[in-house]
Image 1 (cartoon, rainbow, N blue to C red):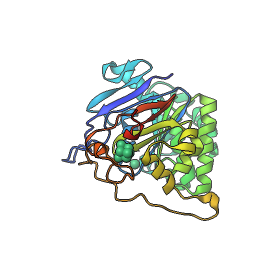
Image 2 (cartoon, protein in one colour; image 1 turned 30 degrees about the vertical axis):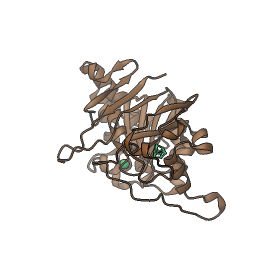
Image 3 (cartoon, rainbow, N blue to C red; image 1 turned 90 degrees about the vertical axis):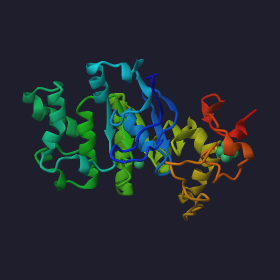
Image 4 (cartoon, protein in one colour; image 1 turned 45 degrees about the vertical axis):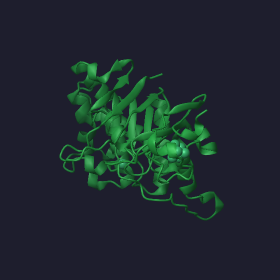
Length: 314
Ligand code: SF4
Ligand code: MG
């Protein structure tokens, strides 16, 4: 196993905001080398924050990340630098992270040259190889980001991440802005790259059908907590947690030939002041008195299956 665990608590929100938000609350996850771990939840559940912490963009105010047996907070400068390069993030909109005045060749080759992974003299050859790897025509390497379609820009974003030889990609809604046909192409690219480059993924999405397609295991998050963690097969065949069940029921049933929609009862409560006990209790159809006061821990309910619900108590 890769032994990457994010054990985090009390994460501060954006620095310029005054409220302290517990975006991620005692999440403890291990990700196995070579797997795709899907992370699912409604907006505001903390999944993006978790991804940013794993990618070293946000630092947790409590807890830690363990990478290959080393604890992030105890790494020295060069170990931290190596970690930051090994874990790359793919965002929803690569356009906002691509400098409009820089050609594709610059966007792709700058970081690896700066980090001494590629010689300046090899810039052209390296860019061609990297663009071919993501299925983009390398003859376009001297163009600017605005000259590409959304799907092509996402391929440029992926190429730029791959340019520093990562081992782990955190994909945050990486295909959410793309047309459905392009989404399928990018998912297939991620899966091909996993084979080719031995990559591991954290794949964050609000879209269950996407997560189902790409993930080996799935973590369902609700208001900063992981409420269920299991193989994709188990979650989709037989979800344990009432919130997972509600999410699955809410997902459009395209296979039936028409879309049905059963919104979960009630609004998503605020992460600033989440409900006591089980955060899901105001919306759960099985709430008991205990749910309002006691926080359910994530417990192993069957080999490799975890759920945080009092209904599982012996
Ligand atoms: Fe529902 Fe209680 Fe389980 Fe929370 S702990 S999901 S409120 S039954
Ligand atoms: Mg998000």
